[in-house]
Image (cartoon, rainbow over all chains, first blue to last red; front, side, top):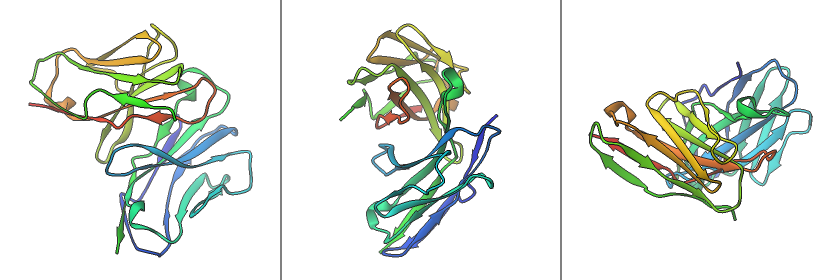
Length: 118
Length: 112
């Protein structure tokens, strides 16, 4: 079974600095997607960034970028120029490509709580 | 924008009560999901549905049931609420074949 591990329950960063959140996953499949979701105190889960496993190029969305290492099964999120609004829970998630039913469902890590200090 | 609406933001119920958590989405999504979120445990899938009147068990279905009589509405039912069901409940929806899920804002349920 696929699993997603976030080894950092909590992280802290100074405003304007850069922080990296770690995520590793376990799968024997080759075609899948990886995601980072943000859950601010408002509780609304928001998609931050996603990465297709077949793409070697790391995904980037403004201040958010990923370091995708397929062989190492690692998918870290880098937040540059951290802002107070980045404070949230961050969840890494995995989804198998090309399957329906339960095999195609999102699998989440346990989350990392990010605090941003002014 | 797709909207997923959960009927209650906070709910307090007594042990043994039958509890209904409602979720409605407004963009004709086929797939709907109920998750439970607990500190240190992340999001755990309770039930999901890929079509009207269709339901499948997730990872932790015990103590829960669901109903999907209409495409836009997916209800989570706690037949007899217990204190260990105190949690945050998140509903999500997605289009068939689409990668992203859209989440509701969650219902924080307290069972006393």
